Amino acid sequence: MADVQPLRALHYDQSVVGSLSDVVAPPYDVIDAGQRAALVAKSPYNVVAVDLPQGEPDPYAAARELFDSWQRRGGLVRDGEPAIWAHTQDYSGPDGVARTRRGFFCRVRIEPYGPGKVRPHERTHPGPKEDRLRLTRATEADISPIFSLFSDPSNAAWSALAPATETSPWGEVTDGETTVHRIWRIGDPEAIAAVQAATAPAELLIADGHHRYETMQAYADEIGGDGEHRYILMCLVALEDPGLTVFPTHRLVRGLDDARREALEQALARDFEITDVSPGELTPAPGRGPLEIGLLDEGGARARLLRLKDQAIADAALPDRSPAYRELDTGVLETLILKNTLGFSDDDISHFNGMFYARDSEEAIAMVASGDYEAAFLMRPTPVEQVREVAAAGENMPPKSTYFFPKLLTGLLFNPLS
Image 1: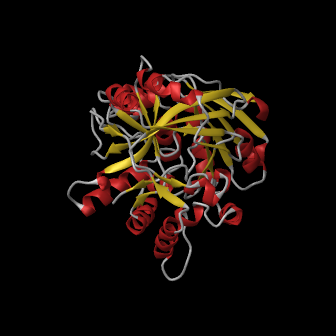
Image 2: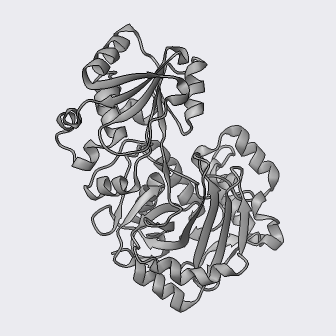
Image 3: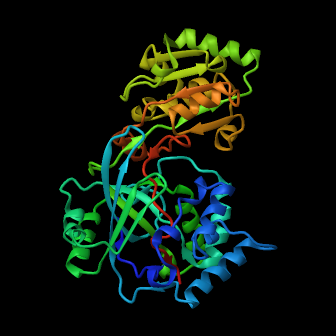
């Protein structure tokens, strides 16, 4: 059972720091050096200065001093009473369709992965976890939220929060991708109890933030005992929410010598039905079933749609996997093509050795046309229900199997751990 609790949030005082738009930031792992500089220039309180710290000799000590100074100066204040925070995101996704995703911020007790509690859906690797652990030790706070999913067929949790969202929000931000983020503080005990009742039987599925969850689990065990460090900041969204969408992340590869190219062509001829298309027709239609992908190579001059001839090919290649995983496009591509044919290892795939990922088909096509990468595999989106089925089987998908859009902002709320 999920242990969902309201939180005494630490948050910006807008009368001190000014507009929230100047102090929030995208997730740390999508920010490059130029974006970081632009964010810091917007405000001396911008969260990126803590979330991606700099300073010699110890950037994490610099983050701690800065975070503490914001609290001493009143830029960050802590609520006296716990609350749930309703959250909406009005957005247009890569498909151009306008939607609203609805969720809420809360504290969730950290549990080991397992049935009935919290499940991951993607593999992680150690580098980002070590960085986040050092930052957590320094700040003694949960800086950015985890995005998780739960089943709520009757919409009971949001129904309890919805009346409050008919008033003016506590905060509103329009981000660089034109997504409008709004949050409302809800301290009403009856609404909080209704949310807890709706989530109590739920199994939580991490959509985005696996590294941070595992970091917080390590931190909680390091501190030991019970207390606020046993809870993590999450934004929960119902699996049934009409605004919940998943988009594909495309694969790019390089280092295709003659031997690899010959092996690839042999594998394609053996296992796939191949249709030559123009680059504009390269993105496969959404769906589920035998693997369907687009392949662009030869500097962008050759575009092909590939369809696995028979699901039995994937079943034979993945005999120890669940039926849901054997229909997972990213899993089948990884095994049949990236590993078995091109010779990539798990380490290569996790650490971008000869590989890269693009969340936009136009970007993927441009990176092949420019010569930066030699081939692009354009993917279908993974259906939400399939994500759930793979996780329920106790399996983790390959990295970047899902692209939940939009991202959550960092800096709307913080969760103190002491």
